[in-house]
Image (cartoon, rainbow, N blue to C red; front, side):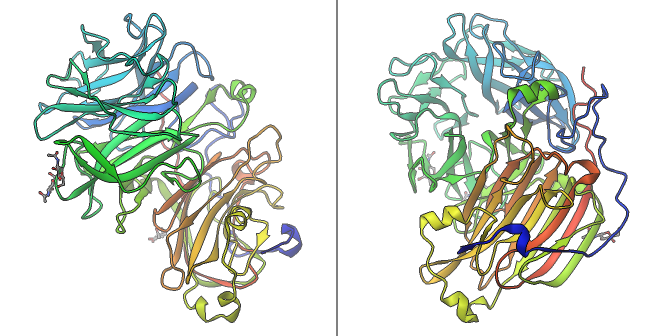
Length: 568
Ligand SMILES: *[C@@H]1O[C@H](CO)[C@@H](O)[C@H](O)[C@H]1NC(C)=O
Ligand SMILES: *[C@@H]1O[C@H](CO)[C@@H](O)[C@H](O)[C@H]1NC(C)=O
Ligand SMILES: *[C@@H]1O[C@H](CO)[C@@H](O)[C@H](O)[C@H]1NC(C)=O
């Protein structure tokens, strides 16, 4: 691959020119402050700090999302509470009073992350991490005060709290984030808690059993552990169907499911797939956590501390994850807020049985407004085509590239096999190849001085070909003091037989990109200085030496969702 400077080879074509829509979200908040980075359809708190999603559930017609929240400031605080919002459509959210906040000796110094379990009688229960009077991490149980309230506004803490304390081989600050519990075939409850072993620094999912949900006994061996990851935060453990996309309840175990164990470490949500038996209490995973680029990840960009739940209303499993800020804490103080949630994603086992698939829940499509489209268009080497007629800073784009037949090109069959270093270099959009980089330039300024490139390139792998998907933030902002990463992953797509598809959801300061119909996801958090609001542009580009065909491109302006604007 040869490196060529971007602007030398690019020329600009404007394909469709329509007046820009007036649906663009205003760049000012309720107090009149300039807010170019506030999102329009990603969940965020009305103000101040947000991190992990907690206890997501569906109850009596409402989706509930709780979240780690510092109600007093836009930074992680000494006293964290569970913020609480409800929705009937997973798109528009009403903010309620914090649901769970320090009140008892077992959680007086903070109420940290945890999960919901729906008991067989339909009643939800929360297990979460309390920071107790000694600032030790313990597991606390809370129940709805009034289970007939579909909004579940008030929660009471169990008399027997804490229900778990750190075992002797675990540091008092390395024991947290209980999962949703599940019932084995013997009817007993199981739950795992994330931990780190004292001296070995092994990451672990410590397993507990209970007959009544109040008294929990530690199982002698962890459900899974790893020598090389360090502390496991926010573990998740759930079954996925081997027969299709439908989700199943967390307690289901039969020959139609396999199990997923997800652990958050090193800034990523990594997972393994395996077989679980509640009789032997053995989870045997098909692969190991590696703490390298080879780990299977929910997202190869910015997403952490995710939590999935079974949505009984639509028989699907939905995962929520936290997208953190990449600007400075000083900037967060100016903004008055920090942290957003990724879009709720449906999550299921791919047909290969080796990887999870993810796709934004279908309800997000209800925000699609005006669209533009383009079919069977050849994109010559070096071209940059503007997609105008939609609100480029608040948009949903689906594009598919068709390279079938590329194996007949003598140049591509000469393509050298890519080694790891070349692969990493290929995550940069300025590295020119034969087929690729081609893709989208999102949140771009008119002169391309600012843009985030989300793109593909074809590589040789063994006897076949593969496709690298990347998101390059290095030119995402002219501002300093912003973390700008270059992310990538190899997609299981054979470009000889399959189209290469990309869906990008662009929302002012975040771009969630789904490659290969959900095989891989890369989220970028960016802070353009010029390419904001109506100054933002969207382009499709091809920087490879060969032309590529856009078989279809459909793009929509997105409406603004109502999210926590009516704060109490
Ligand atoms: C496994 O359980 C799920 C959910 O209850 C059910 O739909 C499925 O038919 C079961 N499969 C078998 C083989 O029993
Ligand atoms: C769970 O399902 C697997 C596969 O069918 C089976 O081997 C195992 O015994 C089941 N475990 C139980 C009883 O939970
Ligand atoms: C695009 O908008 C037109 C006109 O409103 C509509 O008929 C068409 O179905 C839309 N296309 C897509 C792919 O949504």
